[in-house]
Amino acid sequence: MRTAAIVGGGIGGLATAAALVRRGWDVRVYEQSPEFGEVGAGISIWSNALSALDSLGVGDQVRAAGGHPGKGGFRDRAGRWLVRGTGSDDEVVMLHRADLLAILRAAVPAECLIPGRRIDDPRVEDGRPVVDSTPVDLLIGADGIRSRVRAVFWPDAPAPRPAGFTAWRMVVPRAGIPAFDGSETWGDGLVFGVFPMGEDTVYCYASSAQTAPVDDELALLRRRFAGWPDPIPAVLAAADPGAVLRHDLYYQPDLPSFARGPVALVGDAAHAMTPNLGQGACQALEDAVTLAAHADEADGLARYDAVRRPRAQGIVKRSRQVGAMVHRRRGQALRNLVVRATPPIVMRRQLQSVAGWTAPGQSPA
Image 1 (cartoon, rainbow, N blue to C red):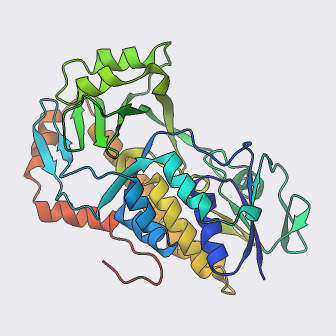
Image 2 (cartoon, helix red, strand yellow; image 1 turned 90 degrees about the vertical axis):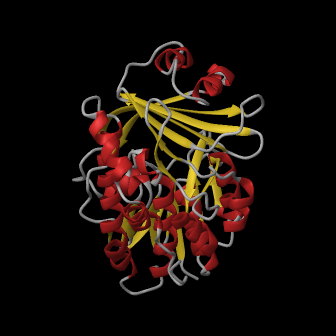
């Protein structure tokens, strides 16, 4: 039985563990927090990620745990639709990060999970990684944007860079909020997204040019988005100040490789990106099942790098470009005109290039 150590027990780490266990590997997942959990808000799981989750045997659980955004789409500052979706339930599922993490955690045997263990000194001796004093066949860094594994084995890697934006996320009770289709609204250099996340909750997010923290972030959002189209005012009125999560956004400049020797990176450790395409976790899930699919091959990590790096780094770039477009303060009318005039088939092709991926061994949709 081959052995693997995974540093980081988030979405990418647990998904990689589940994928390797299904292929007969003996895996240990080291998580520095006392528990395997998630304090985040909502997450969008697109069809490419659902394909990865299906290959792990948990896709239907994720679909049942989440909500669907309805026809959805993008709106201008006045609430007029620029682009509408198809309303197909197989395109995207919205659910809480904690729910996704719980599903992935249940797919990994309990004896594989080691919480409360920080790994500061991973190394390679005689061609084998050594983690927590134990030699293994494969070491996987799934430890996020400030990855220790990347710092040790990619010492020449560029540091994560500020994207220039601040994001706020929150989950809000749905009671009292009229029915609505999910939407992302653009205007005045600001963005606000709001999506149903099951029968009882709403997931929403906002972003703007990077701004300094304030004592009351919710009050700031209520001022900035006063007078915006429904359901934004109702959602902000129903929000709890303690539920608001604020983060300045970063991205990872291109690495020369996602694998070095018997060490590989997945998720944000390899390709942290802005959230503008909703692909951060989706790409981590793609990493997980692709790495496991090639892990038994003699040149498996090289193959993983060749397959994953061009696609993931391309999506990092596209996400930054979309972020710059939706936050622009000048030329909004021209931007909106171009987006509104773009033929639906072109939009579908652009979406398909990102979300049309299928897991190894599955038939293309």
